[in-house]
Amino acid sequence: MHEAPTPSSLQVQDLVRQAFAWSEADDVDSALQLRDALEGHQRWNSSHRESTLREVKQRLLEASRIVVIGAAVSVEDLRSYDVNTAFVAADGSVGALHDYSQLICVVSDLDGAKHLDAAAAHGQTILVHAHGDNKSQWQDRIIRWNNLESPPSLILSHQVNQTIQGMYNFGGFTDGDRALCFILSLGVEAQKIELVGFNLERVGQWSGITNAQKKMQKLEWMGRIVTELGFGHFLNK
Image 1 (cartoon, rainbow, N blue to C red):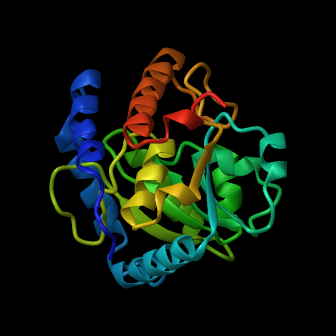
Image 2: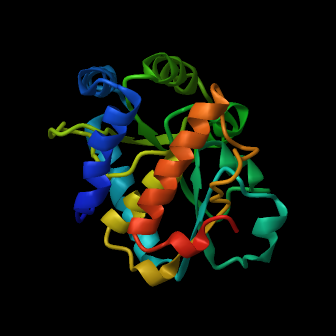
Image 3: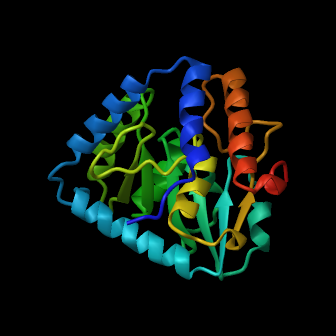
């Protein structure tokens, strides 16, 4: 279905786990439980998710300009883009869009709060990422989103060193760099991609903050991944 993530964007996941003393077993458990929770679901089963991924891939490949929106974006930052721009939002940064007409999808580990839920309520496509720390978040979301009048379409991702049917490891670590890894893994040409709202010096206004110090450490990893992928010139703009 998709091409392949870059080796470095996968290897960094092990380095991040080591740095934060996180368990891969917890990541595996969360991913498998999420996959199993949607097994047989009328809208979110593996067949529907594959169809959603194919549609997203086609839209990204056909787009002439793709902008990945990070958590430090301002509403003003997005006003300069014309109607031919396609957007991929990292989690709560979707709240910076005045509408969803140019939105391809949201990449999220589900701490984007009301902005993510608003996109979900409008039936947008969300790439839901499972890791060991967000099991309660995805459990809550699939229950609430399932009861929406127009539920979102879903794609599932994980961050473990094994194949999980019905899910993908696109590479990366934070929602922002994972969004970039996702787009590149689908075979999109790098020159079509821009980043906006990727700042290493401050936590963005659209970011879910639980621990400010740890958040800044995560941003350092984001910067490393974005730079290694050749997009470092978009940082801190």
